[in-house]
Length: 184
Image 1: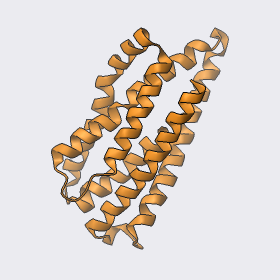
Image 2 (image 1 turned 30 degrees about the vertical axis):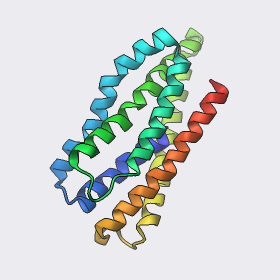
Image 3 (image 1 turned 90 degrees about the vertical axis):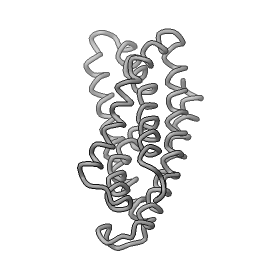
């Protein structure tokens, strides 16, 4: 999950600034919608986890995240700002349904004297996912733009890179869902 979400923050500015020709300010403003979605859905995810159990909410969250990732792969040169914002809001917001119960479950299942270690390992796994996401999604994006430098890439090539990076990432997220079905 963290591999895909972090790769998102690497790729989206290229899409907004180079393909859609938006200013840095507009790009930044549009990208804030993602964390806002996560912030809005976090208390909802917490209540749902209390009602239906953490594992059920985590599974649903990973499945929603996979769906959101595939939706991100459909963005193109003609996608409106509203479509982008709604897609990013849902993509990022779905993270709350995984992250909130996952973090709570990991910390609460550790013995009190081991909660610091559990927290450290949780942060380590998140960081490994983030580093991996930046490298892997960045490489996929770059590969499918088909250019030597992204600075001179045509908007259509940027969109192609975005499409394939998210399409492949969608399968990574779907694999995470399948793993969740087996282990959770």
